[in-house]
Image: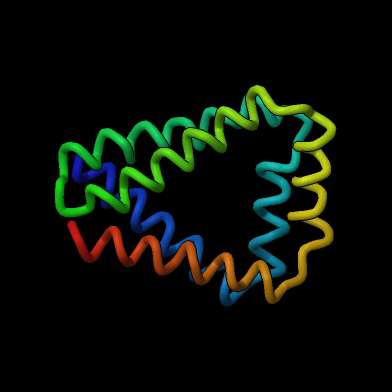
Length: 123
């Protein structure tokens, strides 16, 4: 399970760095991947991340609190994408991919980077 947490942490670090350095290009790639009509099918991704983080919290106790909180948030996000009202989800995704300022996107990239470092440093 610690290998899965290492993979998630490294994935977050890499994603955060790319969002910070190549904001426009990374957002175009993420938009192609996630801004689709099949949002409900893609909701499996945060659910898988959430389950891995929650299980990892109990297996690797060094990152218990951080992994548990992030896992629960990921599970809630996945459940919202499955059960939430589709017009509201589309508005949220449209705002994120088309209307959010680059400074806000970079701030989110920095947060993703820091969370990846926090998990990686505690493993």
